Image (cartoon, rainbow, N blue to C red; front, side, top):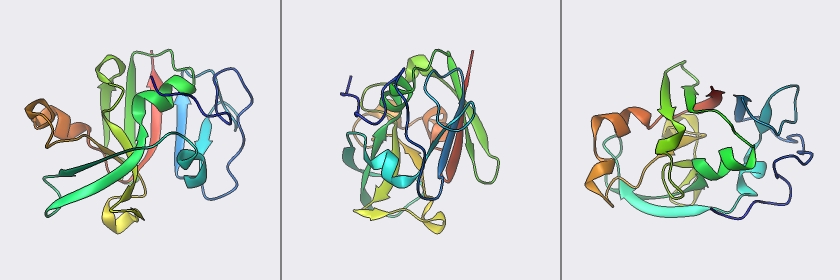
Length: 158
């Protein structure tokens, strides 16, 4: 597992976002900052150790460099105790993902594409991305359905 940031450790106080909230995590988590949720602005997500990789996607042209936080690391930091997560987009598209399927390096909660912050028109500000080109197992209908763009909510379910 990746090391935890000092600002976000399970069972420690978590800072509140000072910028626009781009992600709200709720459900069975131990660490919160607004009521029973963990809310993040972009700077808070950037405080995590970042992962970057280049890959093509079925939704974009060519190969792009993606940078973000491994989803497993984020949930670990929040003290997630659930078995399933529901990832929801701004347009209310939602998919359930088994937490057991999360790996240290995939998927990644991406906040930059080609070194630039992602905007709504670019599938941002957050997008769940896998290193599709690295292994055939990341190029399946199931994995593609987990690749939620314009992500703004994650709920951890029992």
